[in-house]
Length: 547
Ligand code: GLC
Ligand code: CA
Image (tube, rainbow, N blue to C red; front, side, top):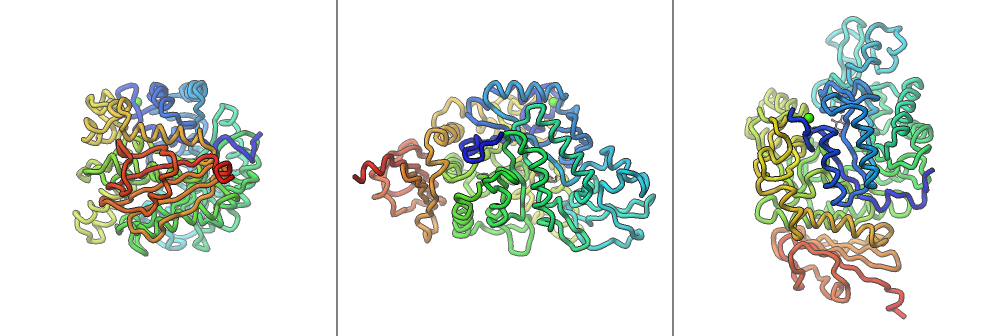
């Protein structure tokens, strides 16, 4: 049973793997479970506690596995159920738990439930999905799908529309139906029996939709559903659970991550992630990052969840561009800025997530439009062309925001295809792999990889990383992001220059009496911070010193 006061995931670091792009083991150009097993040494060396795997279940791959046609089998592209069980076991032998991605808002339109559901209105599975009567061409309402186009798809045989918040091949499940919920719980329990260490819950705040009222996320029954889900499944084990909740506020997150364990361990909130886009626009409408706002938002989340909830800490995932290209500098200061971003994030309270390749400072890519594979990117391109946007303008958005930035193959070494595959990779390898790769960085104590490795270790060595209270410093500075964490016994000071120009932090007096834990330059001398310089200091035994 879960120990709610001191759960294992509070001093853990999670590593996210996008299986398709991690390691291919059979030369078909697609990463697979065997490939992950072959790379367990790497994961163990980095020191992480658990791996979150993006979906590996059976799927037609319309949305790279986020369209599941069998929750209880593995897609042959990734391997077999036996491979998955072997991965769970062999990772477990090294103290690494496997977290599965649960896609519960929708299934594939090729899932047997949906194939049944669309046979007739009185089919027992019909009510597993969300249907509305209508006539062709006259949509129930004007709700749009997240990947473009209307959220309604006409099925002539039934004279009905089904609701889909994502692609037409991802029909939404009807959570109002208790049978749907029961099937889902049984499926989750089945995975728990196989030794799964936790779950990441895809777009969980969209399950309780009320399409007639135009409500897609944070529907009225959302927390009722989640509490039932948690009670019927997760609470029977000692799991980490993290919900993806684009619409979360600190207030909602306190419910989701209530320390009584009634919902999840934590959620992914995205308030900081949406800061560098135009107001009223979408993620494709670029704007510079408002640095003060970034500080305010992260400060708010750190402060408002303290003692009554739990944060997840992340910059990157498989849906987001590479952070070093986004808020760092992927040119001259790539190494320094990637480490600065890591130090800044990993000093905060919460459970940090490292997305594959982030620990190497992997960067965004710029391909011809024909080089992109992501359904969202391709739909966006088509839609904006039809709206009259210029090719160059759309490409600018795609370079900055396409999900494929994060999905290029993992850069293992400087051999052909970066050591990812012996065949042709499903998505082109970033051409900078001879310079940026794991093999090179693992032997270099000054590398980005080594910095991440130290951060993972520090979190385990010093309780202040887990419990210390956050306080933002230098609030008005346009360059410095600095804060302390204090648990009454230890005090941690993190000072980062978030700019490409030297900066005064005004904190030099403070750190003089402290011990340097980590910096991102080979030496951490001087009162001024160099471009993107970051330092982490620790003060121990304050109470004794005061006496
Ligand atoms: C989540 C996933 C994303 C997927 C979508 C639909 O946002 O992270 O990759 O496309 O849900 O399942
Ligand atoms: Ca393969």
